Image 1 (cartoon, rainbow over the protein chains, first blue to last red):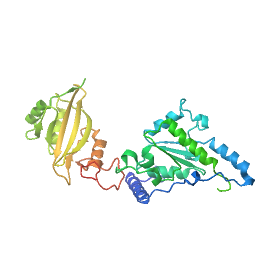
Image 2: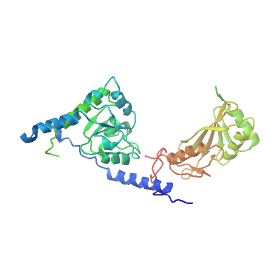
Image 3: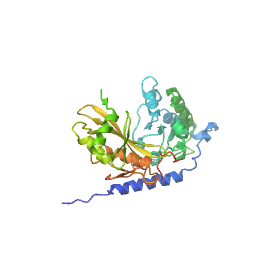
Image 4: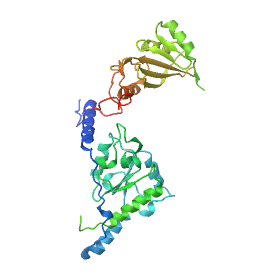
Length: 196
Length: 146
């Protein structure tokens, strides 16, 4: 008895669909997305009514971030090294790396981003729930790094998604990544529930 | 230790069996014409003294005058290895016969050589792009790509 396949395309059509998706993403990402960096200059201005609530909420959010494991290349090893016992990020409350974007707040993109992977990165970013933050780790995620001229490398993560903190290095030392995470903490402390 | 065979002597033996197929044979590699590549490969695989039943590697090189497809063959029975090369001088449509029917490991390797260099393998069952996405224009690892 023949059972029909449900939603299954032949292989050739899957390839063509993927090619079209990558091509349209390449054309749409010619300009970098501007960085959400207004928080650097802002003082912590708080409305009197919600001050304590704000402070507690921000404190709780920043001390319990769930990072999303998004290691693409060599920088992933430095991210993993940061998570091991020597440079513990468990002391910042980030000990569980979540694999599902639905359960994560912070996406640490570590490694070279290629055009073939770019639609997946965008999809994962859009699946994350607000509030969410992005760290671009390593030279390749910041601007394409050594491979900027290549036919297959995206010249910088901010072509695809907006980035909050850039951590330079090739690869950045775990202390550098921890500094980036502390900057994210500072950004979160400056947020207010009245603004969102 | 796998012994690398002296390709000069192998070249002489191939020449005796299949005349006018060997272009040059140095100690490192045997260079064969691309039309006779399939017969030479079959001869190397099936002859009882050689028994090259394992294709370790298949790559392509772009010298500006010609493309060269390089095959690294290994004989598991006698623990020996050999380098076989085939040249094609056509720049627009380089065609080399496919060895997939002899060694299945050539399947993905030939697709990669087609994807990145543009060399067409005659007789390959599924010659389409492997690493780059469908609809990518050009063959990036050619010398004149960028």
